[in-house]
Length: 274
Image 1: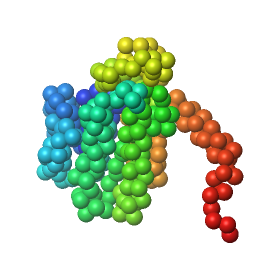
Image 2: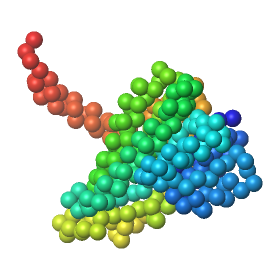
Image 3: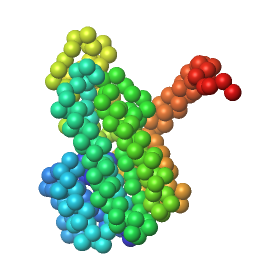
Image 4: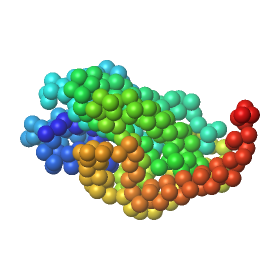
């Protein structure tokens, strides 16, 4: 039995993962900004601890990890899932909104990681899973800031894996595609500034103009995939979730390889002569 601390458990993949981990017989620290939204997970189950957690609040981060350690003895698996979408053309982005986006996704994840690592290092075991998005690779217009914060998470996670692997701690970044969650509903925000020149590009992704097609991704199946990945002997450094994410990633990587090969001579021309 291991103890999982999962951020953002009120809805979506976070909720599905909490339910799946509970079903698998593990301890779960289920968190949400509003504890009432996860309180039902803990009813009548002493293997579940429901905790109020805003990852932008350092005191709440420390308190959540301290409660986990007091109740279950430590955190074995940290899932940094809490977050939300933000859409705006780069020029339209509101500074306060952008800072909050990074405070939540990036600095919130870093705060959680720093809070659990002393215990994981002492035990020489553990797993950290950081949620990114296919947007970090795909970089869709109108989602530049969201793509940027997820790319920042991926860059940090890659370095973190190299630092922690020798200590017996696995680190994985997850890039989901479209899943049947509330991501495009209550969890989606956008800039208050609207510039008409971007109507045909970023404007097509604004909440009032988007027509959402049914998502292919099943949150319950995503949850099972994450559990299997964490428990695998060769836990992946990078995990795509959803056929749409896999296909988009393959297409984009091929296009980038083709482009870099085309400009190879220019790239090599900047070296000193041998």
